[in-house]
Image (cartoon, rainbow, N blue to C red; front, top):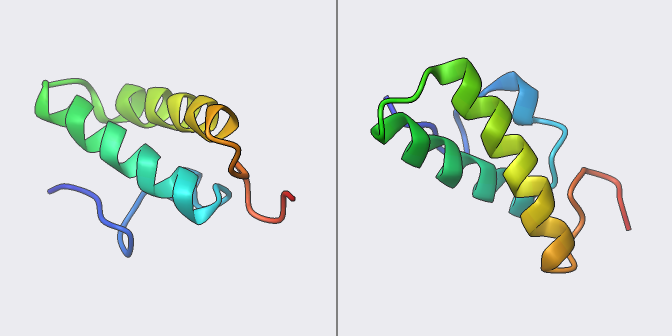
Length: 64
């Protein structure tokens, strides 16, 4: 079952909303490719943080 903005792994809750949305998108794509759930989550969070920095948005909740 794919993750959504309302149902996502607990490890993504510290991300800002834009970064979380990107992490969910990435994780779902990795799962579609057959990747292990735990690995997909870790990679998605790391890539979403990189994406946030590149796009000038906060990666974590509470960041300016």
